[in-house]
Image 1 (cartoon, rainbow, N blue to C red):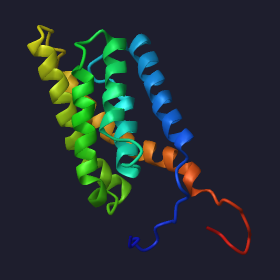
Image 2: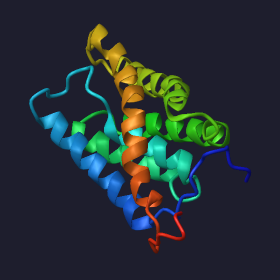
Image 3: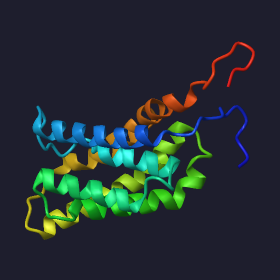
Image 4: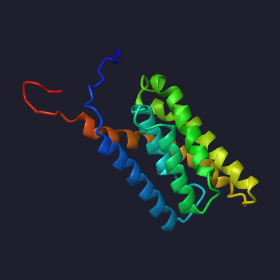
Length: 176
């Protein structure tokens, strides 16, 4: 693959780090839902952000099946319709795989704007399924959720790429 000028060569991502970051995002989502804000409509879905990140950067390791399993975990935790988050995460992962080659050519702030429609689609699926199931309308604050998730994209990108940016054998004569 041809790299952009000035782009740093990254180390391979550790599978243990990938899966542990997904589990940590799931646990943070669970704590966040039980915490101060509860299930506020504007609270970002951290699992969705981390899932899209790894689907874009490691599509052979994290894909639609992973998205489905983590969606079922979120459905069970939130006592939602079984499959509501699973369907939304699956569609989100599929769309991320569809754009992952093009997305990596953009800068990180531009990537945030590119993934915003993906988050909008995923949340629209959740909201429609929730309303079809007889749930109440969560309010207009729900429109802020995809924007907050897109704003978190640069933070998540920097944080999750840090282990790959370190030199495997640091040396003054060979900076990687």
